[in-house]
Length: 620
Image (cartoon, rainbow, N blue to C red):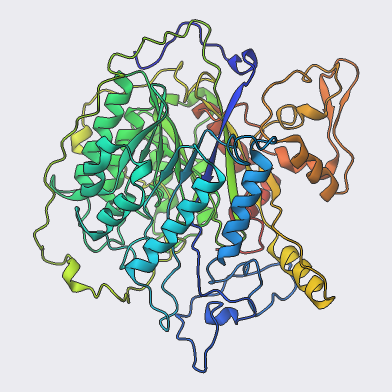
């Protein structure tokens, strides 16, 4: 069995002193050493030195209901722009995380106990927009070394799981079969965070697996660039020896191994697995694999698109009793619509096609999450997840059958012979790149109407169970997340005003809570009267001092319990939107419930759509 069914309790989170673990997802930092406060935004926020900056012009983002934005770069970053992130923004973000989520005593370092582990999903280098300052490989590696040092200093002894983004390589998007210069460099940079027995896999493919809770939970860091259809160095997953196919073999093997060891897994990558991002054959097989291991996967986390979105993976063949009628509905809905739809429109159409609760086969679904970025394409954000870390009372420490056996998996040799229509490493100048950037939002990301089951997954067993952590709140189930956003305009103006008054500018940044996926009883448990029903709730997803700031920021009264029983909480209007989604836990059933609610509630959808772009006023 892939998990222990005996002794698992739906409310096991209330049965331990800790109740919940915590991990950080941070993505797309895009540090830029050339970022200059006061430089023109149209010049990529780069300083002009007696000559015009040669910047690739990109379509401007739309803004609604906002004053005219500045045309020069702010100290902390430039919101809703093509500019990358000043390094002081990233340093200050790390400071804020360590100070507010870490060890309050400072005995082991400020951020020592902040997170159980950190998933870091790539793009830790600037875009190649300014041809006056072309990127080179060493600059990219320097950014990654710098960011890693920040993580290690702020969060000592915390497992860090890095990942390669499409802008972490040169040319961007172009990832050749390994071993290559990129995998060798990142193996060296991240060597302390890649298990030694995984180094060979990483050299050949840029991916690895790492236990973050030994014998209980692992994170698989996948190289999504081999599946990304903007990668001209590969042809997808049609042939066995393509690097994308070999990685899928590896993924399937690792999930099978983890399942045999009764472990759970988080999958992380840079490019989200949508039909608009992946080669179709890679997309089909990846989707088949993760759905077949539903009882082993507790979460999937991605970046790249700079948006905040929840996606659904679905096996249409078993999704519901009315699967045939749903497919017809998809065909009618998509008929003749070859135009590019917005990401928000794609998501709502997908949510609207989720069957009713009575007709849904929960075995057929799995969600994945794309988090918005630190780089202010919209506004800077970070995401903090909590998960159930209460082991069942009869947990058997010896249940693993292979816990002490090193993972031995030998990758097939990848095809490195030049193929017609496929670029090679020699086609590019390693010092410069001139490949046009791919716009991830300029594609349709809907689930395809004619879903093909990959031939390699035909008739293979499906591993699902209503008692698995992805289906029932139990040990290692994701409980929810809080999403944090930085008001750049406020921070830039505050600093500018201080400088104009000749005062010392304020230090650091203060992220604010945009929303959570928790219910009000969970989020505000620290504010409930001592005699209230929820006063003893041990799951506190957000530190109280941060919630105090939110109450103050919104000029609101604090929440309080009604009646002595505390069965209800009085929540001031200014705080209600922080708990719009109210998922008891992030299980398949609760995610589908939320999708149905979003599709059917226009007011809730309007807020959800705004949050896709971090409530920045931008749209796609």
